[in-house]
Length: 611
Image 1: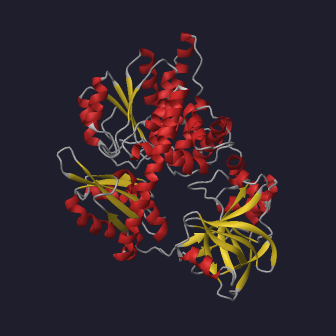
Image 2 (image 1 turned 90 degrees about the vertical axis):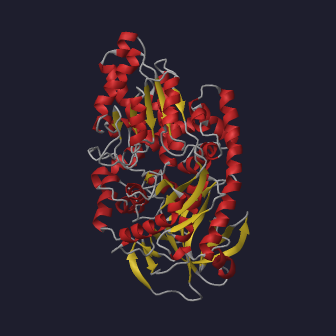
Image 3 (image 1 turned 120 degrees about the vertical axis):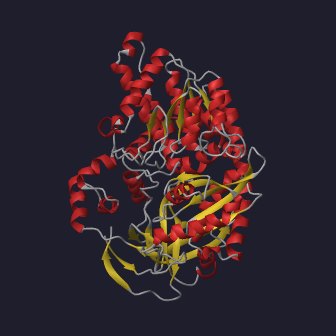
C-alpha cells in the first residue's frame, strides 16, 4: 500500500529513522513467484533474501536445509576420533562455559554420550572465583577423576597456556568453540570453530551449542559408517530431540538467526513446546509458562534463570537442569534457579542505578566508550549492566567488577556490550595481545576480559583510541532502520500473525519488524508497574484505539514526552506489533521503541512506496 512517510531526523532517542530503499521489481517478483502479500515480500527483500532463497527462509526443513557438518574445518578427523573413542569406551569428560550456550552445549554432549552408556563427568567453572575459560585446576580435577579426553565447550579457542598444560597432564583435549580465533590455534588434539582462519564453511553464525550438535551428527555418521549400530544391534541416537537445547542456546547467545541457526531455532521451538526435556518442562512450570514457547520466552524467561545460578556461585545448575533424567531433581533445580534469578534482579538493579550516577555525574556519555566500575559490584552481573548502559546511551559500554585472586590480590573482570560498527571483541583481543589485559575476547557485540587493576587507566586510554580508530570515517549517527509505515487502522491481528509466521523467529540478524505509525493520538497515558508507560493510541483523526506500552521508560525522554504531551499533540511512534490474548480475545498491542512529538504541527512529508 502507499503511505506518506515523514522525515524523522532526530527522535526522542536521538535517532534518525530510515526506511531502506528496495527495488519494487524485486518485491513484486518475490510476491508473484511465491504468492505472498506485498508486505511480506518487502520484508524479505529488506532482509536480503533473494528470490531463489525465499523457500528456504520461509519454510526451512531438516531434509533440505540441514548444514553439512563436514564443511567445518577439522570435523572429519574429529568425528572419526570420537567414534573410535566411543567404540573403545574411553573415559570422556566435558568442560563447559557457565552461560546458557555453555550449559546447553554441555547438556547436548552429555545426552549424546549417554546413548552409548557413557556417563561423562562435566565441570562448569565458577563465574566469580574462576572466571571465563578453562583453567588447569579444573582439568587436573577431571584427570584425577579418570578422564582421558576432555571436550571443552563454548570456550578455549584462545586458552593456549591452559590447554598446553592440560595436554602435558596426558589429556586429549578437544575444543568446540565459536568465539573469535587467532591465526594460532591451541595445542589440542582437535579444534572445531567456524571462526578458525582456515574454516570456509560459512557457518560462523553458529553458537557453540550448534557446533556441538553438528559434532554429534558427524560422530553419529562416523559410527554408522563404521558399522557400530549394526554390530551392536542398537538404534542410532535420537539427534532431533537435541534441537530444543540447540534452539535455547542459540537464542540466548544472541547469535544471528540466519542460515543453519534459523533452521535450528524454528525446528527446536517445536520440540521445546512439546516439553520433552525434563529441565525445560520444570522451568516452564515454575515460571507459569504455558502453551507454545517463543524466542522471547527463551531470551527473557527461561534463559535468564538458567544463567542466574552461575551469577551467584551455583555455576553448574543450568547444565544439571538440562541434562537430568529425574523429574524430582528437575523440579528442585528449577525452583532453585528461579530463586537465584530473583536475587540477581535485586543486585542488578542496584548496580545499574549506581552506574547511571557515574555516567551522569562524570558525563561519561561523551566518551567514545562508556566505562564504569566498582569494587563492591557483583562480578556475575557486569554484562547485564553494560548491556543496559549501551541501550540507554546508544554507545559501547563496559562494566568492570573485581574479584580476589588465589594469591589474595584483586583482579578486574569486565564485560562489554557494543553497537553496530564497533567490534568490542576485537578491541579486547588486541588489548590482551598488547599487554593491556590479562585475558580478553568475545563477539563483535559482546565480550569480556580480565585486568590488572593497576592498568585500568591504561585500558581506558587504549579502548578510547581503539573505538575511535574503528569509528574513523564512519557515520556514527544513530540510525534506526524501519520496515514500513502503518496506520493504527491497518494494525490487525491477521497482519501481526502473518508477519510473525512468515518472517519469524526473530532475534539477532533477523530483527522483529519495526513499523512507524504517523500522526497518532495518545489517550489515557499512565505509568504501570515500576516504570512502564502505557497508553491507548488512535490515528489523529480518530478511529479504533489499540494498547501501547513503552517499557522501562517512565524516567526517559520517551516516557516523559508521552506523559507530559501525549494528550495534546500528535506523535510519530515507532514500535513492534504483538498479539495480546490476556483477556481471552486476541488484540493488537504496540511495543513502543521510540517516538517523535510533533509539537502541535505536522512535519512536511514526501510520498514514498512502502509495504
